[in-house]
Length: 359
Image (cartoon, rainbow, N blue to C red; front, side, top):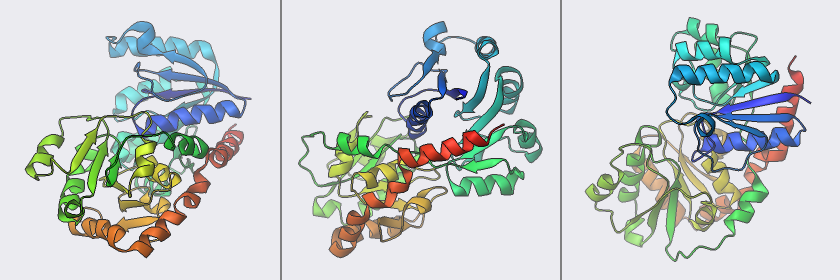
């Protein structure tokens, strides 16, 4: 048994946060002594372990210096075997201080959850190597991220472990009753234009045959920035076609009832929404962004994978799923079985092997 600390910004709203919460439960199930550090008092997802909630304990108005001082004192007294850091890490100087003077453990593991490596690495390879020394370990959530790290920074201390998904839990949650009579396709996640590219989603939907056939577009999620999402809907005259529902802790009844779900991101890590949709038996249409979709979707087997940033190609994919009943039925029938490899049981084994390999 190891004493493990999982560090994250919060346990709310996003896919990375949901993955982190699931990770704590997997580690707890493996009989490790799990501790969880969050720096923002925001919790939506079930987790396991002893919680250190920085904002709840010390207030939300702490200066960066005070946060570092509190965290340094905390880690000094805990004697962790392993720290698993799930935060984004874009500021080199801050991370250098945390890595070298705050995070105290026999082994430090840094998870990279997005193909946008600037979220996790300084631009210059020398600084990246300085930050992530060989004694540190990197865990990536997709094969493409692992390859990109090796190519850009010449760092070879990374291990691929996919995001885990609670299949039985999602299936049970998806059976919750909702009062929706529309036929619709679904997009869900953070409404964050610079990452999720909802402009592409709306334009492709407008171009497709779906509006004329009375098939609505449901968008479930909280706006994270000034995206002008409502204004885009108005500009495309889609007010009667697009239904926006704020963030839901349990979106899966909507996923299950959707004709299909859509992903249009500029970049991802290993998008949970695709796996979750397939678990619900709902096929997916996704752009082939970096990274993750092509490691989840087998084109025309469990979904459709299309060129990114191509409005017409995405619209044609929408039309294919409505017009080609054989194609749609094939993808729907293969949906759930295609993601069995990402079950909590399987990914827990991967984490067990990885932790046993640490000195």
